[in-house]
Image (tube, rainbow, N blue to C red; front, top):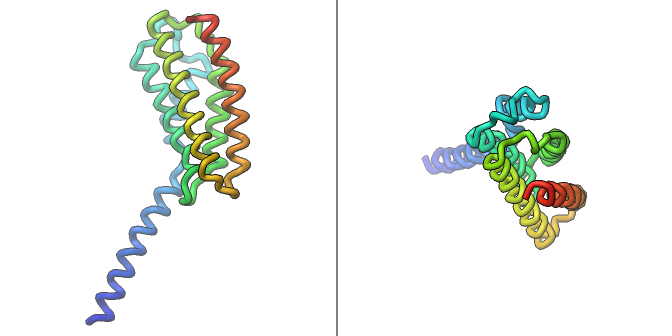
Length: 162
């Protein structure tokens, strides 16, 4: 009986590990969210009539991508290459949006989300530098470069619209 109980505990632990592995293997953002962001980038959403709720939904995609990029500071398995690919895709699309078409109060919310993203990425970089995970160094360099370019772009946006 003792052997059976020991085996049962071991199999329960494996279940937890298997569950964690399954969670980390699903590290792409949901297709529905990617499609929603794609509508913005392909100009299928009328920016002159966009609502605050639509802006919130749009930036929820960026938050999810940023959360996946932040896994670079975690020792657990993660699909960082995919997370960075999604971040770069989002950035490429984001930089093509004509903010002048967005109504003033909604544009301020849009810029606020951009500012929050900039600060979140800065926090991820700071944490990565403190942790110094050698196998994640290339991702840190990519994120630092991304942050530089994003910050420069956002400064231009802020000068133009604020």
